Length: 593
Image 1: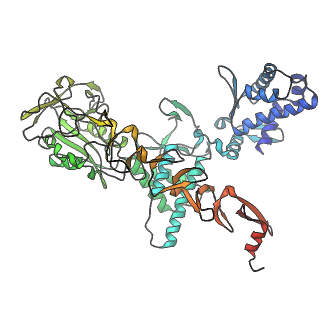
Image 2: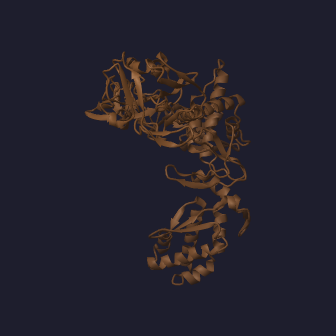
């Protein structure tokens, strides 16, 4: 239907007679008319499919099989473009130029169009035309009109895959699994469907961990971000509670019904993934050593730099005496959750009584929470959370300063030293009292080793020496446990471990996972891999398929939809495998006949 509507519109702009007798005067009338229809059909296809085309492409259609030169055909197409640009449709069509050719970009500005458009036999709102366009061509889904951002959709899918409820009753367990599949289907629906100005949309979570959306009646606007490309403009966006947002996303009238308990559970999991929900607590003495150990970390969340800390291993426990024995100068702030800590940072009192927060270990949400605590409690924190940039600090008033500091410490009982990010410079380590500093001029000794000694900070991997932060410790997989360069490892979200690239399998969605994972399914028809929660097994075809590609057939059960056809018996249409004929179906329906 859309193609007919658009064709009527093009014919209204480009009059058939004018083109035939003015632009194509040197062609026979019948051939001219056929070429006109070809051009009209091509332009119509571009509009209906929301694709970009060039003068060269359309000129080629015109020139093919004729004795008209490409230059002359190009002139004719330019005149067609000009007619479109100067017509009543000019406010709906953008003609963009490039260095060597001209592109015809046909894009309805859906949120600006509230007027009626006379399309020959039809009169429709321009707004409705755009909705029809995208719904008929789901592959043309635009991020501008997305219900949820890609990052939020991926996070929701991950939470849904890992969400569980305990049910002893088999029927309730199947019902739960069905509801989980419904939620995944809803996300897939949103990934293929545009949502417009008559609906709340553009849900995402910002860097501060707040859920935001674009209210009904407000225009979707894309702006260019150097790091992320095209992103939604912050104009008119509103903050919304997690529970309300998740409920809105999954409880549309035309969508499958999801139990309220499940929506609440998903909402809570999503909120905990993006918001800081831990207790900040200062520890000192032996508690610093206790909480440095990786066994006290929360393994249920992605704690980013914390889970990759080089000092988290049990063989490092005897390195922390310099922290433990100086409680008047060194303490540690931890973020404690129900399943372990999710962040930590050393707190220093310098010789001039300045309070400093050292490098913060954790994810972005945790780091922001620590920074806020520092500002609220009179501490300066590092400008950049890394092993470099030792002298730049942010004061409690938000001012950025560059300063060096000395810290005098009791060294009478220290045989080993930890890896230090900032105060790693010392002029002496053999005295009972030593001074550490962030001043590189005091570089007699550097306390940046992972083996408990000074003058480290680098590790030898495969014959090459790298800085601590450029390597990752791999504990599991087929390779020997040890440090590997970051370029040679990957993080597997399925089980929250790092693996060597040799143990990785690339999924069809672009992610990399552990190749020996029990959750991995091979999709022969796609020649790739996916998570088992995204797939179903066909007993008849003896292979896995994406759930959205599965069709339940009356005889053979679940099979690949592409391998099915329909047969009709007594005005009832049945979906069957392509190998099933009418006799097979009749025999199945009436086995005793």
